[in-house]
Length: 447
Image 1: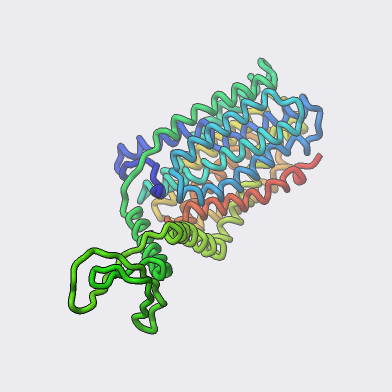
Image 2: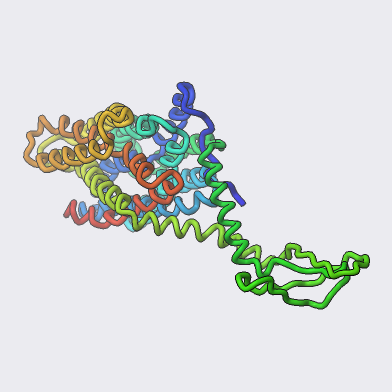
């Protein structure tokens, strides 16, 4: 049986560990993380309108489909991480996402872009994003939000470069060449996946203890198939024996060892029944996961955190999608509008590093701060249509700060409310809530 959670960085909470672990995650997330993809989508979105001559609503579908499949696959990755190593999952996701974007260079219709850039890339990224949260939360006992901030700052650093770089690539090589080059760049994330390793922690011991309890329970339920009997060392016909009324009837088979004994002597030994062992294996693997999933989905804390995260994520995704087009409608040149995405990334980078550290100090309760972040984010979004053009960069920076402050606390809140054992499934289901909003975003953006 494959060990659970058997590939993440095997280092403690000391200073050198922080640098080494987070540097790997920075490299990994800067190359492939879904937020970087969404920020480049602002440029790709505009190029799709110009190249394929489609409506804005149609050009928004690849991003919406990408978000949906990324989030739905996130729930699947939570289940898979119980049976497949995290390193193997992330390696497969990195290769799949990179190939899908590169293949878009051969697409001649908008439907092909939706399938490759949206669906297939979303599946690849969806296998990775939730597992990075699990890696950080299981590797750190303190300063989890700060560690997540450093790790996910890679996507912010990449956003300083990718939108302007994508714009230059479009002018130089066209849309087909841009897809090919972006896919090649994303393939570098494979290095980050390969560097993941296996730690042995107290929490993993608890997981093994839980597995042993499950196996003991399954053994009791399968006991009637697991014994055979011998009497006096001689072979006897198949017989039945009932020890007492509290035990189920058990079937025995004879074995012969040889020798003579005056009084009967019975021995009960384990019977190797392949079908029974197979049933026991499925019982021990599937039932705990299904029970855990039920507990997560019925938890009010999970529902509140996940719904809030879905609203926040959708707001940020729509802003990043339309901000360039919005600025152009307000009379801002396209070359200047690209840097609104970079301004958002500057604020996002600052928010992930600074405000994540503030919540780890426990000076203010984490859930209270997240509420304030979401309230301020909503207020700024409402004021955005009436703000002057000169204030657009400032609004982008402020929204980025709030965005970065929320994202680093999402998985930490789930960990605090539900526990580390439920975290992989909880993050996967939480991203599913976000995926449900993906089909609504093109309608909100409009024609």
